[in-house]
Image (cartoon, rainbow, N blue to C red; front, side, top):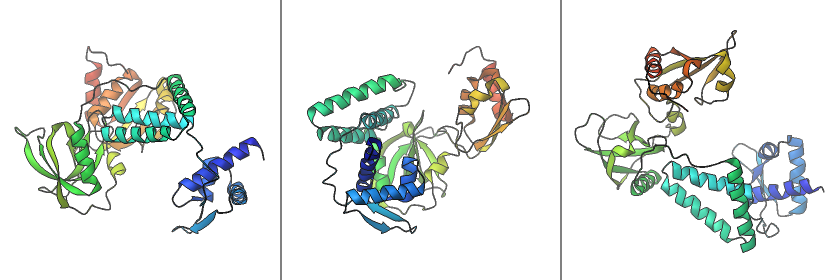
Length: 330
């Protein structure tokens, strides 16, 4: 067996042992970029080395293989690229103000490091720092609204229940904060952070509540039944950034000049975007979303290289930015 095949087999064994339900042929093929016949041969090699491999059939009628006896695996260690990925996740959580997630990930990192021999642990830390520097990774210091850690913990605890939250909230047009009872469904992190939920005193619509406008957040003992059809990711995709308005939600069409088309194609402006190449070399970008002000901020960076086709309201906003004496840079 070649060295690479041995490494792949060890990786496959660890994957199979660590996943609660084991691993399928399709997942092996995807993970190792091989066809299903090769994946089946890898399973056979796994069974030859680990006689305790067993399989179950899942709800999709696919077989899943799992290594039951892991004593042969031992502690494979923490690879430097894995430590880098974990450290990057910690820094992203810190940048976004998700203190609970940062603390949890930091605790996981520390426990993993504690299982390693001191020399191995130190080498892994040095290698990880070297890779982070080589990748030029750092948290951007840009403006963001700070959120009290106790508030995030209360919200997270309520969502786990799920339990209703009581809080004081001052909306944009409220002269004073008002008492609200909210059924929390999720958090959206961005330049501003939002709680997605339902206000039980109003209709069943899902609303966004800015965390910086909330105070006195407390978990109640009032359990509620979540709407099983609600999809937080789909809800988030209704926006260009973190802001959402049902009244603004509309078709968006931009045209990038031929000179800027290649650069624009490298961007994911929206998860559901569509690119359409034009005969003159320009590029149309089309999607549905709200958040026109955030779009205008972004488009200002492109200068005359982009034209807003739809909607007219966004076109007017971009025109104002372009005619402003203030230079907006990326």
